Length: 332
Image (cartoon, rainbow, N blue to C red; front, side, top):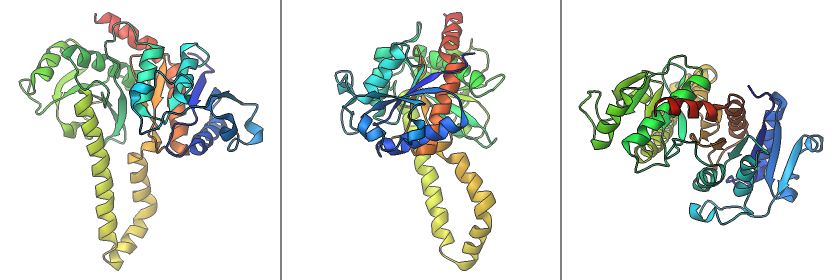
């Protein structure tokens, strides 16, 4: 296990500039030992970096930033952008991992192109943690990259997800499910039916699962194509927000409801918020590349950035990319 790792952080890409990113980094440095490189406009970064941390943080200056409104395709041409430069530090082995809350498409495109794919990985997927009823998380992949997946892609996703669940999430014997429109073996479209055949040889594969199984804790890894996964992810986020808004509306309707809510605030609502809060895990790992790239929400706060950094540290220390490659080789 690699003890001290170096994390390159895109300091400029988030919705709110470098402030929450630098604050998240400072929080992380107070809790863990690691090296770090902040990438971006030095003049803007130092405004939020306490003088006592200047010796602990290396700043890699660059002027350009890929805007959220821009096409991801421009990222490979903008070599002075913060995300390009941060990824280059991983490519050159100056850093072990990159964390970015910037343009997600640009982050993924540059990471795949510059860091490169592992052997036997045709299309790297993006994975995300979803809360489940067992007070744990389920891993859903892909959630947005490979929208036109093949059965072989899904099979590779299953292997990668299994490694991540076992090594990072600490699941001894991960259960893997293939997302479909029914649990029966015969259910699904042509893509899932063919993927089902391939995945049957994978230890831990339990067969088809439905959308509800993402949250009931029946399986640890849920495999799907990027189009479906992204719809599931955005729908889940919308449902969580809607339910919260419904509760708030009902609470406002009566005094007794307000009193009840006040009594529940500390023990119930606080714990509920923690379980569904994106900031608790901070980012989504891009699996199947020769390194570590963590993609965070553009609206990430300091807590989300801190936890994204922690995820990058754990991924790098455990050498997850190498373990994924070994697992893929066993099934070729």
